[in-house]
Image (cartoon, rainbow, N blue to C red; front, top):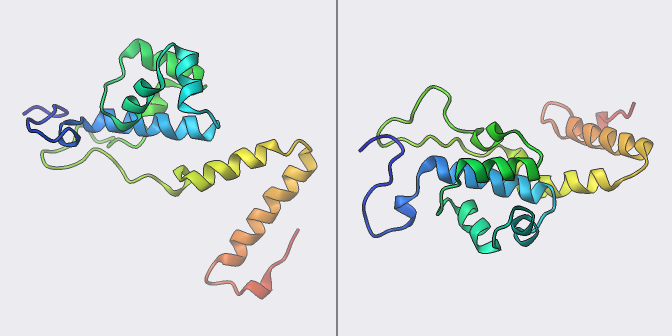
Length: 151
């Protein structure tokens, strides 16, 4: 079987192409980061929310024209959807092209980013950013929490 082909079998999950799953995952991550529902995204590109669900699960392949429409609506380059795929060529037989999602793609991080950008005062946003940096420094195992210094 050629790389990227769907294997035969009765399990729909087993027939999903790894690239389609990755593109769908990135679609979902960006949609959630922007705070869009599946319904709102679907209406904006002339689809049903069920079709967006299928795309996000990798059950349906997204055509080039539709991917272009989605990239414009989500304000990302088309290459965004392919980030996380192996860059050293096609996956080897029995291997996966997908790389585990980095922590910045978790739901709580998207929530934090949306909340941050809802702060309208630039000085308050700067203070929030510095607070997060100070908390991260304090959380390092090599530095005791009592050494926290705000600048």
